Image: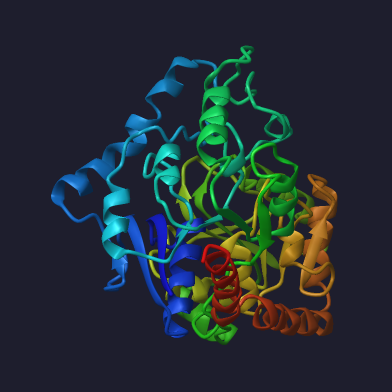
Length: 414
């Protein structure tokens, strides 16, 4: 079976990392697979970048061009919103590969159109890394459930019109995808539930397959050594927070300082320091000392950061199956998050971390204290963190689960 995976990039963030890790797992299983991307970051001959200079230039500007119609909505929320209306030459590139099955991952920012997907003429497995597949353009709907109907009057566009851009995107998906041979995969149970409730995907087969991780790479390094390399204090309890962008938004950066203020009033106040990584886009004033590592460009640096920390925190407002939590757990570092989205698929409450009541900062701070205050309990939490990944989130498991779906989908077409 020849498999073609589509992703805008093979980079280390979000759905890009998940797509490349799947490609790694398939290769290790001797599957004839290719990853077709618009932006290539890995030196891997099975990752295929744009085939021409024009293609590379086009891919670099598609995000701007794709979003031009959204700019007419002056009062819109400044969140990611994808229309996917630009024509693409991807169908020709894929035809040359001649795959038996196509697995689509994050293809937004103008990389591949709604209409292009309908022209692939192959069995398709569509992997969702957020809600975009079944909405009228938003990637996370917040409290809106209009995707269960037909979108329109979109809150994120601040629109009162039923026939706005969100309705246009929804209707294009309905028209082009309704009769496709399409199987939906979601990394989390939460996202599967949303997809089943949606008007676009309720008729399709929906499977849950967690993302995988290279557990041989993401593994615990002795804490003393990791801190020494990163020049972090040996005697402190280090709380780690990191994301691509450290700014208020979906990953919960806005909750960080209020939580730390609560911790600063506890008996841990003289023992804790914060460690952050990512692009800091604001002047962050904190009640405790902050050790900012900047943007980490390689996986070894990430492993060092996770290994140096005593606890990783991610106060996301909405999230699917965030890589940072999986990476931290794989490095034996317990995690604290709100009990939202797919976090409960990875964090077992008081087994390898703490799931706080959504947006209750007192409970979030309580979870951090609970992990840090008892050294014997911490050993158990750390051990189970690693075990959870080894039992459920390895590359081998991810590849085997996808191969089963690929075989079933392809077999139904013969």
